[in-house]
Length: 153
Image 1: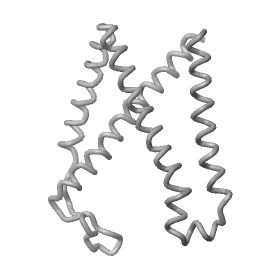
Image 2 (image 1 turned 90 degrees about the vertical axis):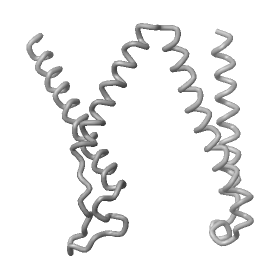
Image 3 (image 1 turned 90 degrees about the horizontal axis):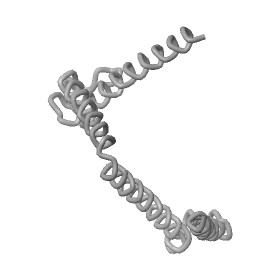
């Protein structure tokens, strides 16, 4: 119960700091903010740094707590490593399915950075194929679950 109070106080403090920084922006003239670099650094930069800090803190806390949970539960660690292995195999399959052809616009002109044989093209293609494969697998599981639910009824 005590940890809930501490967490609530921490959330309230984070929210109050964010609200204070946000209100500071609205207290300034909108045109002045757009044109005056010193004013931007004075009122906009603090909320950006604060938001970035909160983001990194949330990511770090999430990773640390996930790893801690995995260390404490070896069965979950095995399942996680198996899942990462499957995702790795799918990534390898997607990588070999991707091509390195030139990227052209509607007029047939090669886009900047879209030259044939580019590593960027290969990884973009890999990402597209990876998404398609995972989407297809998710769709199959969705249909399977839907059919399973209909059979139970």
